[in-house]
Length: 162
Image 1 (cartoon, rainbow, N blue to C red):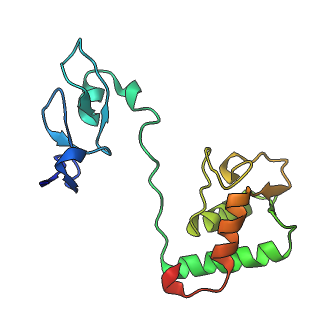
Image 2 (image 1 turned 60 degrees about the vertical axis):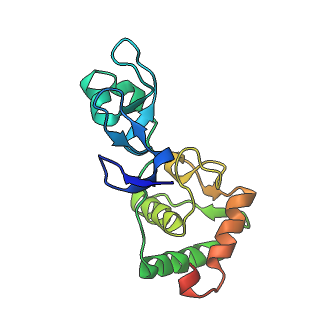
């Protein structure tokens, strides 16, 4: 199987993972285009993001792109794990005390994100994700999956495995 690059982002993909835009005929990957048919404008089933916005159908892009996640270095991950260890020691099993100040909330959310827990709206790691917590919440409650992932991340393991 041949490997080609996306004409938009220049990442290399197998030929089966690239789509030809119905309007501009460029080869685009799943990050730079979506599969949709707009037969009244052009025949084809794939569209790149710029062409969709040019023809006024940018509404099809809404919710189609995964959020880019910030990458954390080893030092940041270590500091996040240490901060969460301290917070977990002061909490009940399966929950984490939720602070009252926005600054503390952002800090804990970034720590959770640094150890690769999903903090967004459709998270499987929390009953109510940190980004959706109300101002009156007193504890962040983990799902079983999230609690086990937290426990694994907080146990002592070599830094190169984190």
